[in-house]
Length: 140
Image 1 (cartoon, rainbow, N blue to C red):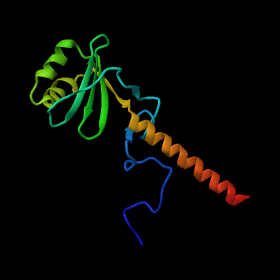
Image 2: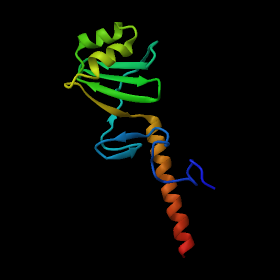
Image 3: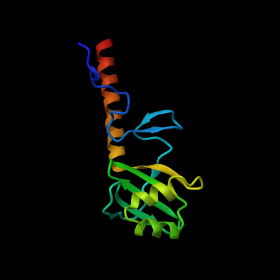
Image 4: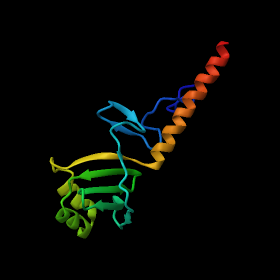
């Protein structure tokens, strides 16, 4: 029977894998990779916005961390304090993000290594190990 769903559990990460994203540097769908950055060591502040669920800003490094409503966390840097204040006051915030931060070629961004990404990465690794263990038992 032909279906759009995969035939069985897979050890491959793709766009259907929870917490996955496309990494251009790795050239594939990943859950965890060397290109992720660690989360900021400060608490997020919840906001009322269509795109942004919460954010945090580290003034010393100029890093802005945004938790989007679609389960995506990214850090942007360097964000000057004035631009962060403009984002904070902007209603809706995503308009400021879309017009002033995303198109700015001097501002870099990266996905954040979240607890969810770590859990999914460990579970994928465990699934691969169990699959190999079962295969080695069948061979012997």
